[in-house]
Length: 259
Length: 158
Image 1 (cartoon, each protein chain N blue to C red):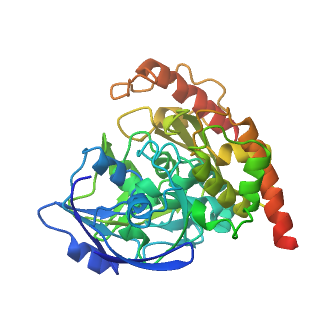
Image 2: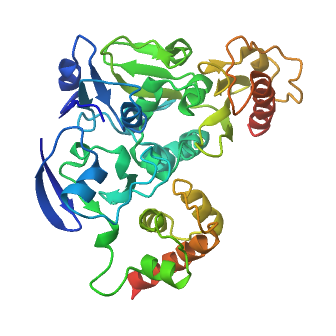
């Protein structure tokens, strides 16, 4: 593995202050993507700033929203009585990320900041009208994911927490790669009274909202003719863009039927 | 950098390069070679150990991240000559052939059993998604985990 120096931030302020302006330092959350990326020479930071001591974990339930600290591990979201009560589909999603050991280390902030096109959380962020809080501002999920592994974060900007709207109902449907368990396609459907919202991950370069399907309402039985922009769909050895588009329609119907 | 680790109830103070992986410290510095390196890409689970009671892949964690924490490896399970109930179950159910994946399987299985009191076969199969075995076809491993979980429960109440 490449050489780098390691330090553990003791607070949010300490973490942001430690960030190197030249961009050679990286925040280390759970490390479940960053460390394998460094090993494979896909990334070569000179310094890692560990956020585990920065006080960024925890779950808070409000009247209309549930807020999850950036360093909250997937296993803790999956097991949280508060999350299971307020948004069971979100706990279900967290419990299906990777495998048990990845869930014991991986964090919501790390996953969102990495913006992997096949990560699970982005679908929920879109479906639940989430707001990404950073040390500097609040970014709506729809404006957060902007490209393949690209997001609205500026250099040195740090996610502090993610705030989800509590829906009337929600369901997550995932067609997982059997080896990696990443989503080949994942669909998070949510209803807010009678308004429906659909977040899709895995299909395209970044998670997106399928607004055209939302208009068909909760009782929809057929989405085959609903328009779906495939211009930035992924095509790889696991699934072609056409097959992914098919999965988006099938999984959306399944998720909506569970609302 | 200087780190402090408590491994299998023994405190260690170590001076390691910042980019050292936890598994490298366990195997290289402490000669605890029961923890294996299989894929080194966090997929196979041969390197699973417990850090502060949670199963983690020690090839995907820096030793520095474990500073100040308690680590349990496969070597820390048996009590003298008497095996841990999960080890005993793997032996009795013939849950291994080459044995390479076994330490990781057992460490994952113990964490799973501790977290899910009424463990079902389906939960075992799902709970072991992060551990790959290339010999057994998993049948006897699943049997062993269920038996080991019962053994752990019996040991806890006796």
